[in-house]
Image 1 (cartoon, rainbow, N blue to C red):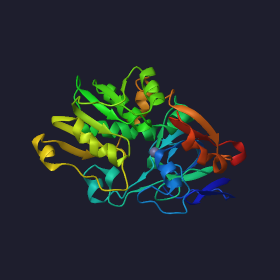
Image 2: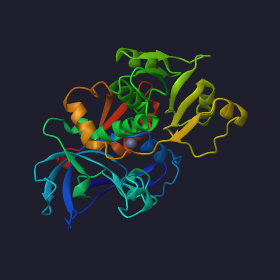
Image 3: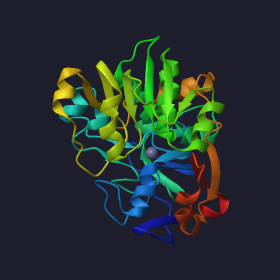
Image 4: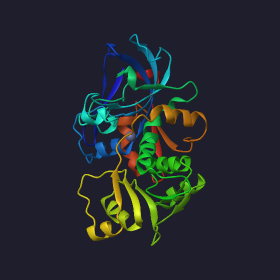
Length: 327
Ligand SMILES: [Zn+2]
C-alpha cells in the first residue's frame, strides 16, 4: 500500500508499505477519504504545537472495515465508518472524569502517532463509528464537526441566545452550525470577503468585524494570537468566551476588564462522546456539510499538491481521495 510520510516541515515522501496485521481489539480499515485540517497545514509549515517529525498525517478519516477482530461493539467487515482519532488512557484522571478528550496521555492519530495518509490502517475497534447512510466524504468530516460540537457544549449556550463566532474556517462553520442546532443564532466574523460570502450563502449572518457590538457568547476559531486577545473586547458583562483555535504562544488580557465583566473563559479541545450524535445529525439532515468541500486531491498527488493548498484563497475544506492504486 502507498504511504505518505511528512519527513520534516515542507517535505513529504512516498513509500510502499506492507498492510498492517490486525491485532486483538483492532480493525483493519481501508482509507477512502482524508480531510485536510489546519493541524495538517500547520504541521507542514512547522508551526503546530506539540508536533514531532517524521509523521504520517491524516486524522479526519472516512473508512471501510476490511478485517476485524471478534468484538461485541457491532463492527463488522464492510461497515463504513468515521474514525475517532483520540487515543486516550481510560484510567487517567481526565478519562475517569468523563473527559477523555483532554486525557493527560492523549495521543491523536495523525498528530502524535501515525495517521491515515495511506491505503490501510489498524485502529482500535472502539474508535469506529459506523453509518449506513453517509458517504465516505461526510464520514471524513465528522471529526471537524466534533470540534464545533464540543465547543458549543463547553459554552452551554441556551436556545434563543446569540453567539459571535470569530473565524469562518471549517471549525468556525462547525461552531455556527451547532449553535444553530442548539436553537441559538450565530453571527460569524471574518476578514475575508469570499469567506463571508460563503457563510452568507449558508443563511448565516456574516460580518467583517463586530465593531462595538457585544455578545454574551463568543467563540474564537482563528488560531490567531491577535484575534484571541481582541476577542475579550467583544464580550458583554457576564459573557462566556471559548477559545477553540489554539496558538503556539502566550495570550494576555487586561485583568481589570476581565474582572469587571466577570467573564468565563474556557478552552475547548477535541471532542468527547460526540461522534454517534454527529453522525445521526448529518443523517437526519440537521447538519449539512456538502458545501464545505471545495477542493479535492488524490493521495498519489498529495506530496506535490499539498503545499499549494494554502494559496487557494477561498478554500474551506480540502479532501484527499484514496483510490485503488494506493492499496
Ligand atoms: Zn482536524
